[in-house]
Length: 119
Image (cartoon, rainbow, N blue to C red; front, side, top):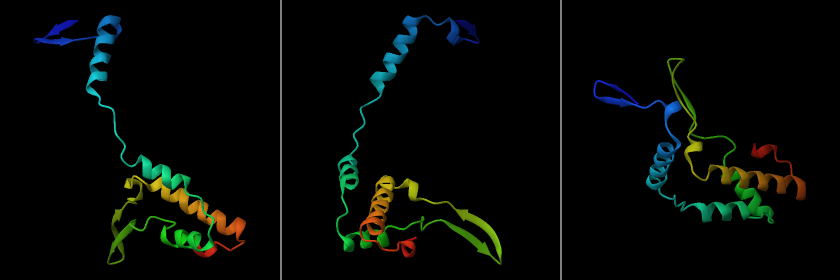
């Protein structure tokens, strides 16, 4: 420990293991277990099995292939701003993309349908 202007400075190379364990114990007590209320919905979407052509088509048409919110703001032919894709902010984004992929695989593999129109 080094005292400077009434402030204590701790050098991590010289901290004893007892102090380090005490600090990590304080961090563990401060963190609360996180409750994920969307986990049952995530599990349900991940376990959803596509066995119906109409359902597969509906899913492929409903869930977009690209983020619909990404835009370039153009004024007088010049790009003045870019709105980034916000799909990653959706907490169920990965599940929806996986569901769309499974629907497209079902249409292509099982039904033998051309899926280029969904891309």
